[in-house]
Image (cartoon, rainbow, N blue to C red; front, side, top):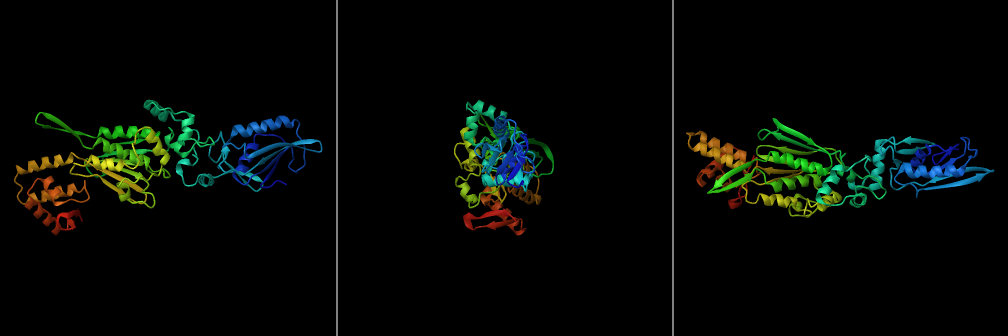
Length: 440
């Protein structure tokens, strides 16, 4: 009788491939061709021709390769020839029909004496079981991929990218199956970057927005170009020399963008978010720090790679020089600035905030206008407002930083801080020269 591990076929048909896939995905089994539903041998007219059809069918229509899992032989009973296909359970699940892909219509399992399409959850379970928790090496559910964007990028860099290189980089597995890393580098990448420009410093009024898709390399170039459009340049003259200073250091934007793409957790479908305000740019990517590491570890330059194969591709393209230096570079670009970048992390997200370096000149300009007006009692309120604005660019401030930005005397700064403490606007941390102030 037919069972979970045994199926009869009166003659050769293409449907045999579904049963082979089901056996390989479940617990193995045998297919007897030339046998009726009642288990009696009816024989085949030309077993030699049919066995050739079987081997070609298994080789050409099933992925990953099942040739080493299957044994095909002719058996004669009572002068009648039949074919026995023995299938072992595979280790590279899910096995699927190459024409259908890693989808329910292409993946089959065995239940009792019947063959069924696997559900999405079953397929994902098989992928995880075969590949473990390494996202980059897991099988992509999308197999019909092309790499036009990536190949064009490699060509511009003068680096060869053929089938052998795609396999060595990990885009294609040893079994010839597209991996999740391959999906990320393909034109069909399902992850995107969402960019938005807001008016002022709050997410209330949109000025512009764009969603960027395609290969991660295409996304990198498009996102950088988009941000560059809104990275204004302030010019001033020092004697006869003209000095141009952009709102945000180009190197800091580059490193923040690379960090968001290379280190995010692609196990989630959420987009990477880039928000541009008048006073800052925020880069938010999905995935916090890896377990066992703290933000202070990362800021010291400890290299913790969630996606090592992806990082290796960016390294080969000379987009990154060394692992673990991106955040340090960002901080170095702000070394002489009054405002400093902020780096925050949670269990499931990572955020880098780049403050607008030129914003302090706008504050200074406002203060110079203030001097030619009669503010009297309102002047202290004006300064308090400016201090509050400064906290949008830094989580804490020293007395000297407040004094230099506002351009007032030390005594006036001390009185201003004292008043803001008494109003519970600020709170003090530390004593003496180590004193810092934060918004309450």
